[in-house]
Length: 125
Image 1: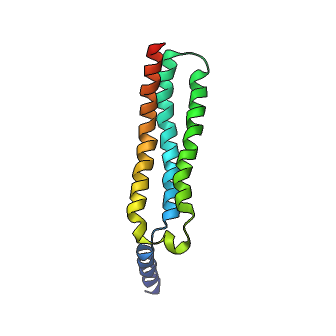
Image 2: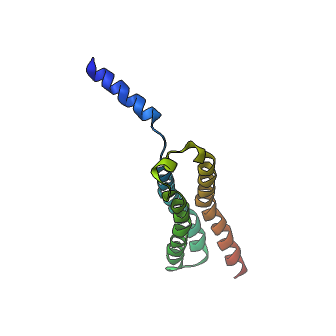
């Protein structure tokens, strides 16, 4: 019976434990980078390879992935400077949701925007 009681207390503690905004943002940045890179590979490189040959599409991929890292790190830096009390403060929830929305719009939308831009440039050439 003591073991069941201990498990119940651990579950209750986990439920009442506050969210750490720093860790959550770091997780979103990591997953956002993975999603962005995957989309970049399958969307933009495909469009570039239709218009050119050789290593240019792969060089473009490296440049575009390297370019997104500072933008995503900016989101992480905004939250990593919080102290322990602020990192658990629920008053930051609206700002966190705003930043997460912007991060995911950037991570998902940018590859499609870059694809359209590349196709437009290639159609002019």
